[in-house]
Amino acid sequence: MLSPLGLALSFLLVLPCFAGSGPWVLSEGETSIFLGAEAQRFDRLALSSGMGASDVIDTDDGIESTLVKGVVSHGIRKGVELELDVPWARVEANRPDGPVCASLGAATCSRTQGLAPVGVQVKGLVLDELYGAPVSMSVAATGRFGQWTGPRRSRVTNLGEGTTDLGAAVALGRSGGLGQGFWSAHVDTEWRYRLSNIADASPSVPGYEIIIDAEALGGARSWWSLGPTLSWFERPQGIDVEDLLSDPELAVDIDRFARLRVRNVRVGGKLLIRSSERTTLALGGFATAAAVNNPVVAGASIGLGLQPRNMRAED
Image 1 (cartoon, rainbow, N blue to C red):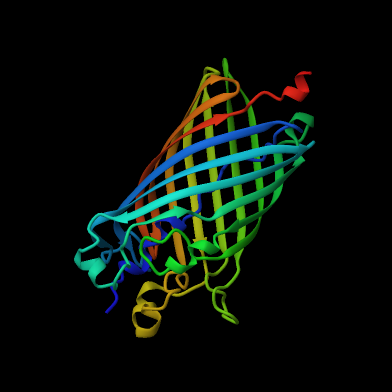
Image 2 (cartoon, one colour):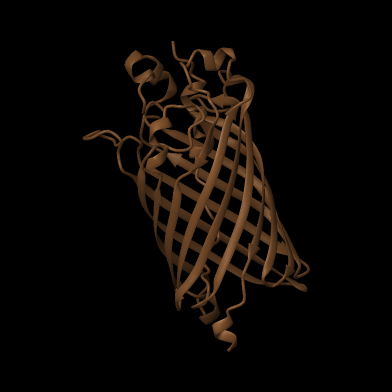
């Protein structure tokens, strides 16, 4: 019988890397570049009863992933920003010949690396606190493309589920002074429709997803700020691990992972260090606080944000 562990391990990288940049947009002609890396590891899997239940499964020696990404944003006109997110990832089981991987079939736990789903977003500012609004607010159209990940989507170590995803996002935020520094807080939400891998499936496989990302940062000096972060990922429609295991055909289907309903709530913290107004180092850490049909993950991230000078504006 297919192990319940293997049915949810692949969500390690399926979990969205929501940019969490808030509602603010670049000025027309301005460009920003973000280069980042993230490492994750998990040793336990929460089933449909959640991570606090007694049936949480301990893995062999864990599954680890490394993701590096480049994000380029550009102000295409006043109040409108275009963003491109290009990630590369590597996922591997520490014991690909262990009993869990052995129960899942040949190549299921093989190391997988390559281009992960690419994201694009067009964001427009609709409320601006600088002009008297109580908060800044933006709306966005989003897309994510990962068809090249499809042939390996049945792996525990997959990089995606081979789909094209379309979505809409809303972000709210506000910032202000704090001593000789400043503070900022924002909440980003996204609803994502995923084109089904199975024709006429109801609900679609995979189902739609909801992502909420929030953070509040502050510092008494302008060169640093820190604070808590929260990330909530939910796929409400689908079946549970236990239901999947009860059907031998579904348990070995190439879209077995895409059929699951899932939840993963992560909490953590972030530290920003600025060497100038155009260069920022971002350090972060996170851990799963709640999970359903999903791994209990811990990880860390590092990134460098750069904003080259707008030469046209300086002429």
